[in-house]
Image (tube, rainbow, N blue to C red; front, side):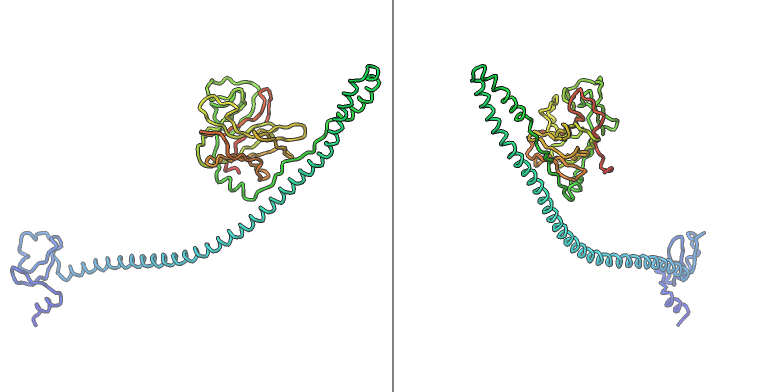
Length: 383
């Protein structure tokens, strides 16, 4: 076998179609194979011509380099795939475990809440029963007094029918009995039962809204802070523009927010206020009046602290310090929550206010009353 044949076999050389010669060189500029007779062509001037074997080695090195890059990429992909599959298995196992644990925790929570409900109902029932017993006991004391007063009325009527001298002689005994019977009866102090509800505030805070005061609705005697989070009464009337939204003569101010749907909650710090009103107001689009307001009003009388609503008067053992207002537009319900003791103070379902509802604030009850304290809308981040 000739040397040219061996070279052709070893390098897998092709044969020139025109000359029938073996290709043993390669032009890098033209990227084409060459044979001996092609070197004389003018087109190859200044071209880099190398042996075909050298060109093949260069290509082989480039291909090997690409192969190594692909190999490393493949290894990384395989590693990532193995990691993903391992995490998928771990996640599946963890999900099953978490689901079992969560179900168990919910069962325990249900049992806990049932126990809390039982304790709450028992405590509330005992407080209510105690108040009813006190009322019944006092009723038994007042009833004989009522009968005595009726008897005395008959005696006075009889004295009035007497002759003048007889009436004068009988009057001292009647007046003496009057002093004893007409003493004002004392009523027992019966505070509204307040029982803490576990988890209630955490539930309410999930509906927390960032409320700000609306300066355009504030009564001229009410002074608002720059951040529109605080309001207090000022003895001097401010010179403010007249508009249909401004409260007068009611000492009130509205929140900027309007609620027509959804569930909403906000809290107000009372700063030891003894006279205030908080709630919601119907945004009727005209001048606001007390008829548009659904609120809970607080006032102090003697040694008692009272909350007044449209339906009843509630006597508390001590003033409130922070009040939460919960509004459910769909259920048409408003509730007031004692934040300090985590208890519901009053709830009014089926409110009859229609249209957009806005938070309502009044730091005092009388226009000529100067109240040093403020109503402060609480921030959620500060809870």
